[in-house]
Image (tube, rainbow, N blue to C red; front, top):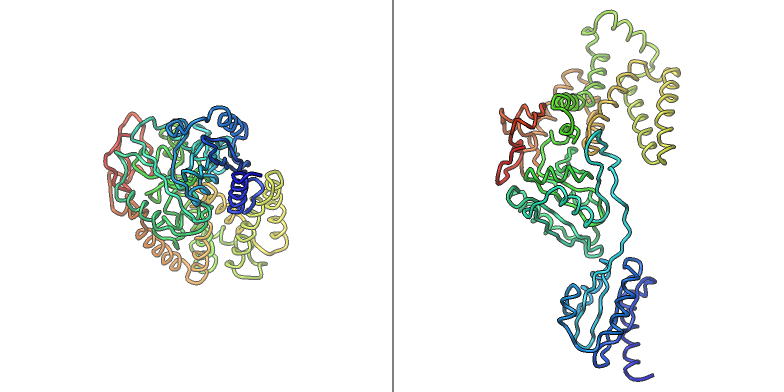
Length: 475
């Protein structure tokens, strides 16, 4: 073995040790000008192997001189050799030629990472409109957005976060529409993230939201490409990581969570009706159990005599207070819901239907809960399921419990006190430093009706100003 071969073997061994002798790490020597040692490096699990073979053949047959211009023009870039950068490029699915003589790297982009095809998001079904949802590949996701926004003013920026995961986080916006203060805040908060591992959109949410301990979401999570495009065209900012199928949109208002693409894909009067229905469902899902508990515990006199007698007959054999009765049913419902989500689809649907019918009937027959309480909890569950945002849906399900406790101790007075605290909390919330409860606070009377009414498109209007875009665009 010659001295050059010995040196080559030492370098190969050192390089493989640097990558912990991973089974899918490949480092192969290739021919170069003037008997120079060059090594082709890649992870076999995330590159296109056929393209790599063609590149190796090309090097073998055609590299006869030190033609750096050729390398720069055909491939991505020629940059100084750096072990940390080399590791990042390889983990991104790139193939790298390491030139030891000149201490340079040539990046060759030949990635082939597995990802699923675009499909309709399972948590955001629509009756009409686009069926394209995001996938765990940013290039595909960005192509879906650019397909809807054919404008050079759509700006895409990126930042690498996580010392170990090197997760690339992208944020995009319209240059002529974006709320500049919100954009600066997003960039500042992304710059301040100093962690080793970033693997979920939930982590990003905690770093980007104004009020982490609030039960109410301040950034809209969505997997729908059409909804992201609509938000960006309104002057908002979308944030997504390279391995996530969920985007964050902000700033948003409380009422944004009660709008769906169906509002705009259907007729104006239909969209307006269902928009009002969703707002009503928020009130129903939070206050109905508390209202029933308050009536049964303190305010029987407000009921008609016939209904009062019927309810008294129904609850006479229940051995405990209404609050405990409500908690039993609500927690049972949450257990059934959680089980139906975690189990395979076919089994989960069976658990949801059979569990609801069988367990509901059994606990009534056993005298653990009354028929009226079953009806109240059923209406409450339906009201929470109407809310289109899964984040807001979870918030509503949690919020009903403190109201039930207040109602059991103080009746209507407790509900009124809880409602006042809830309203004060909502009025003090912000989304990227923009009012969360606009157009109520600050009060914008000309925009208020748009919460409930979806205007016909032939009547131009401006977006609700939950933020400060550079320009107003007609919708």
